[in-house]
Image (cartoon, rainbow, N blue to C red; front, side):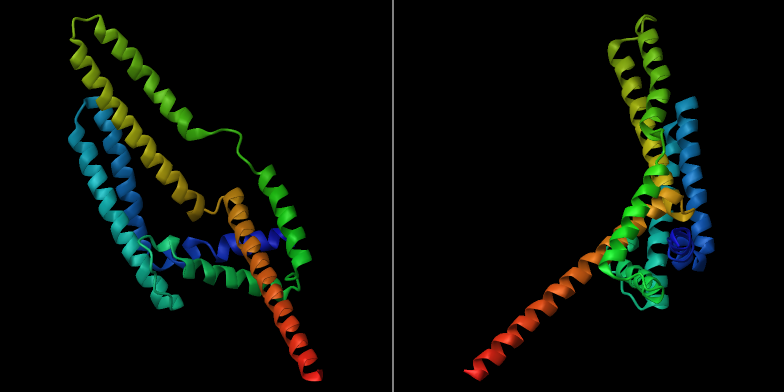
Length: 239
């Protein structure tokens, strides 16, 4: 049951299934631009030519803009949702659509009561915990790249280079490494959704189910309040 739900969510309700499969050329251009930006950063580190990094970043930003605009267009055409946010993936109506699909799926399998939903989230949390990665990649990646830069900085201080020049080189390399790490962070964030990594999918699914539970609690409170008002009205009429 849990595996079927996770599979349904990760394969049928992820960004690739809902949006990106309708814009393969734009998606391909985006990935190529990201690779160009990363390659530009590496080339800049090796040969101290910042123009390659700048060109890569400009191409990446342009590709991200095209991707975002195309995604909004597809969401409007396919699901009748007009995205109101700057980023297509941040729109509440889009996420509400996904939540409704999950709620329908659970309702068809008679798993839509508060008690069953609570147990479901409990089991999914356990599975997400088991799938938790043991290595925090990005800070470690930045440190590994920065250590040789720091070593070179200490070396050049003893080669007759002025402190100002050495500091300039250190700051430039620090900024380049920070940008490269940021690009890899963006790459990792997007990849988590596109290839539907198991833990990321489970955590997203838990968020949606918890929202469904909260909505049911609100509806229950409204029904109880309405019933209380009706009882008061009946009592007043009897008087």
